[in-house]
Image (cartoon, rainbow over all chains, first blue to last red; front, side):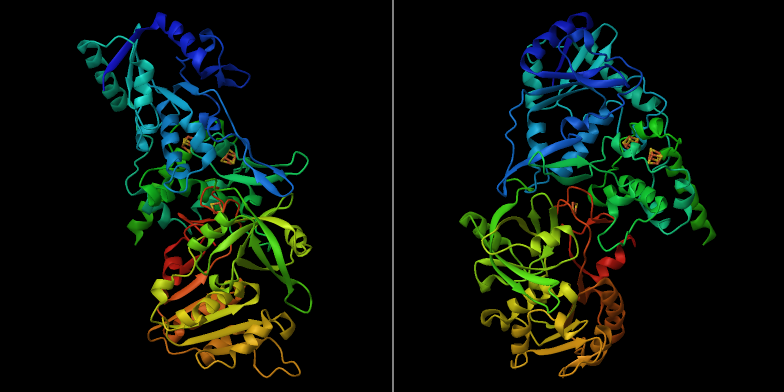
Length: 340
Length: 280
Ligand code: SF4
Ligand code: SF4
Ligand code: FES
């Protein structure tokens, strides 16, 4: 597809036009650092950040709490949500990759989740390629790239004083087809930048046979050791762009059935009515979180279920670092193998 | 299509199954003909539904009726908590929400032409009852070989589907073994635990598949006995019960490794279970 450009100082004007048609949602300054906000003025957006937003943008497609039905006299009525189309602007490729991963769950053929599907269909995603990844990022260790395209309609790249756009979908091209074409020299620079950014990204761990190594450790005390200090607060999962577990509850007062984010890091999550709990301790729960991302996702679609965004690493109150868990697992499993 | 949308169903009949009133069966009919059609196009014994009572939530129950019995769906519900208490209070004419059929069900095509030993205990017998009813239907019976049923309950008062099962003794095309845990006056069937009865009465494993559903403890002790008797792991089927929410493989709740009990199960072969991480 072709590349389009706009000078950086002209970009706010373009965004102002988009704001008329879309709920333009971009990283902006907020109480807890950077957050996605629906902006009324292009001046609010903060694209050139060295850090990603605290919250993952998954909430725009899978809200933290969402009404599934209004219930009257025992009949369940799904709400009709007529929303202005959303333009998610400046999403980092690790987070768009998460959309793409979650699409395999929520848009599985014949089993589409109508709520996710509608929100996805009513939106456009413009990702912003990363030329200076931050210290907690590790996308290239888990199958992603700083300029990865998965899950986005358009990708923008900054070259000094111009933005270059590349559309990957029809609705993406429709948005930018009026912009001037980029010349050959510019395109060359973009491609070079994408290459060097990926190459310069340090690897956090070696992911070779990671799935098998984790399975080998399933019954090992390893999990007890790594989960030792975990508080079971669930922050790692709530902030994670690929965590999607939910609970369904009835809000009787409001006459609604709603779904809320849930987390496998809570004891009650797996507590059964009989009293039995298949994951009765934090070791088992940490194992579930890590193995879901690095083993079970591989089993299902042969991709890691972690995009290397680093949010769980930065925000864990006791500094549990999933990269260290993975490296330690690789080392432990190799040692076990050698001892055989 | 909305995966989470319950279809409206009406309580048609309530049956008190047991003398202590902890088990009741509910036969529900469809409010909408389109729902009925969609349900029976998909339904296969061994599947389950999410049964909703608004305000109390949803819970999975195995389907206890065979399609040929009529345009209704039967569930057998044990009163163990707040949702099941509410279900137990339902009266004919009440409206409820149901989603389903969900899950894989028993692999009828693979079972065709084989002898079957169906082993159940407690309330989990419900889907085995549906399977047995399905097989015994005159047009289906010829598709399967010999049929042996082993069904255990704690005492005779807790036996489900009594009149119907009593009539199975008169049939020449099946063998039924019922067992209770301790002797009772007037009980002339087996006394003892299901695994022990299985050991005594199970047919030869040749060309035979075993299907086991019951309380976890019963299943746990029955599976090794079947293996001892020579049943290969891929010919032993069991149905798992897990905490569920969505019932359609989305909410993440019911996983064992990369499998979701609600979607990939609830029926698994022992061979499949042996390949999964022991996260049960
Ligand atoms: S597991 Fe951690 S690093 Fe990976 S995607 Fe989730 S929050 Fe980001
Ligand atoms: S954020 Fe840290 S402490 Fe909290 S549940 Fe996750 S690993 Fe445990
Ligand atoms: S109950 Fe939701 S995934 Fe199985």
